[in-house]
Image (cartoon, rainbow, N blue to C red; front, side, top):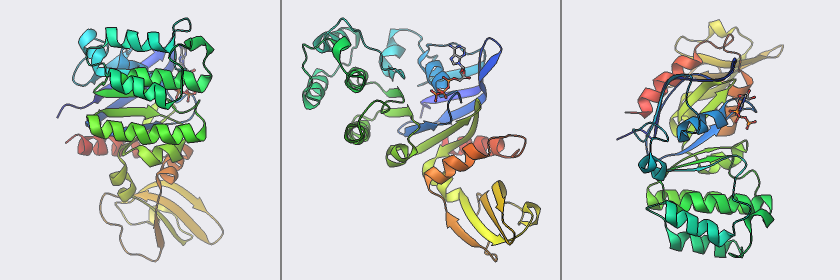
Length: 304
Ligand SMILES: Nc1ncnc2c1ncn2[C@@H]1O[C@H](COP(=O)(O)OP(=O)(O)OP(=O)(O)O)[C@@H](O)[C@H]1O
């Protein structure tokens, strides 16, 4: 099966500033992929590279097996909503839907019109007069109405109120499953991603720190609490992702691809939020040298 996104040693620099460094990914189709990371981590840069809005300064990227943005055929297969949900301010909502129909061979008019009605928006309203959240809803409707194979959304729910956010995410997963669409969405709202994503990418300081299927990542990570000890005293095969110590106890987040050995410790699973925060909180690659290697291993696992 063709990967929805394959990147090898992908890099992007704006002038001398690296925005994405040595990014290697192999995302299989059929997933809702959550892309998380702190401000400035490189999320939007990766998504723009995937749409062909930017060209890499090093490495390679392919999306659905092709070079991003390489002609009308590829553009029709990928729907994209940028972070600020751009719309044509002088055009009405109905004009946007007409434009969508003209430009996209697989345009789903019924879906788009239904969605606008469900949102209680007036088709005659100029897009420039919509609220920020309503503009985001219009941009999302146009992107989804293309019926793309891959929908790329850069912080799609940031401008939506809590109820609209929940509804949007529910519809997104339902429509992705019904239409066989893969989705990549970035967000700072980990609890939202937890609800809808089954594949996770954590970007920190322009590098991929973690990537893989959520269930496999959760199964491979454990929080263990034990009497005070040095990480080197832990059994081999456990990769220490984070370590915290009090006078008496040590708490480690460890990763292992084999079952956790039974020892004199209390072990707990991590939630997706715990996992993300652990990797974001241990962002210094100098402190945690093994994680990039783990990412590559998981990627090849997921790409099988
Ligand atoms: N057009 C640009 N020119 C110069 N530097 C840029 C440009 N766009 C992004 N950058 C820089 O590249 C880095 C990555 O930015 P990017 O927008 O990809 O991050 P992000 O993870 O999407 O951040 P956020 O969560 O704040 O949206 C940042 O250091 C940013 O300042």
